[in-house]
Length: 398
Ligand code: F0G
Image 1: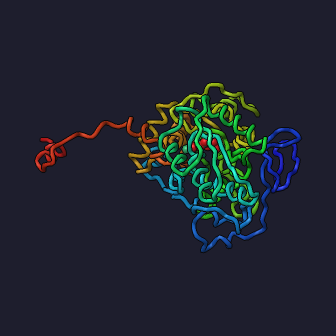
Image 2 (image 1 turned 180 degrees about the vertical axis):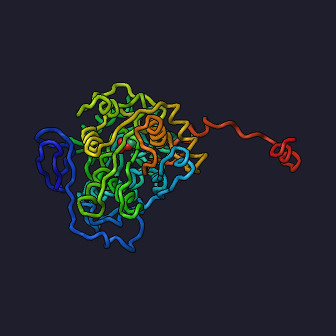
Image 3 (image 1 turned 135 degrees about the vertical axis):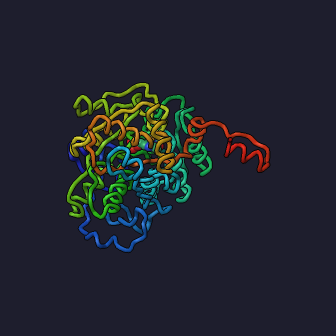
């Protein structure tokens, strides 16, 4: 069943519904399979390894083998910061971001429901992912993007996979409002993270982190927050494994936002249980350029319940962290993803993260999603003659 997170009203899993009819709050799927973790042994390393925890019909699964992403120990950066650091590399998913986990479940649900048209508003990655999974399932796909504010790689993906891409004169929040209204008229099945089935896929990040650590929770999970679905999903995942008795402890959920788009971090700073909408969100990390996150309530609950926190970072801090991760660990991520590393650095400096803490940073999207930002941060290659002499002069100047 689905349940309202505020008033507890219950709905069937086959109802096409995005928010509570009674009180307007967000919904979540209730999922409590009675299984032993031994059943996961010897299964292929994709997020469907945990299929008993996914509330869809197994015979209808639409998958590109998402999940099972690298869990890299970062000794260089960890030593520098005085912590034990792991990075979960979500850019290694089929379309290059964590959204694929949510879309695999979301599109499977669309197949179950028998809908023909799916849609989303997006800062880019959601649309790239939806376009690919919709293509695989043979569904018509409509995506609304904020005009001029979507990184090139993501735009190329959405178009190349055959989505009908519309550029909206407005920001992400306005695009989402528009497409939600269309979905409520029944014109398409909405696959933004307000759809609780999206979060069911994304909770597998939490499953994998504790599985990767040998059925132990890290002290802390740090991730960028935009529309606030992912932090809510990961918290749901680790809590489900905790309730199932697979792990003993829970991580402190720590959300990072850009200074110019920080409704959640502002609320946490002031100890509030609700957000104030940011009307003109701005950041170079276009993926998280969001002022009215739909899962704000779930995210705040995750942060407070887990004794976690939230922090803001500037665009310069984001770009510095992006380069640092690329050059000390070889991990290339897009700006929004680097916010988690920038936030970690700040929290270590402020002594909010303790020395020796075991921290997992979720890096959410691949470097090449935003090629322009990457190229702009570098100097142009030196041009030389195609001769050994010219080359040795450059690499070994005397
Ligand atoms: N990192 C990346 C790379 C993202 O694309 C997003 C969200 C986030 C972090 C934030 O996750 O919204 O669950 O808090 N991108 C959405 C999109 C909004 O349309 O692709 P969140």
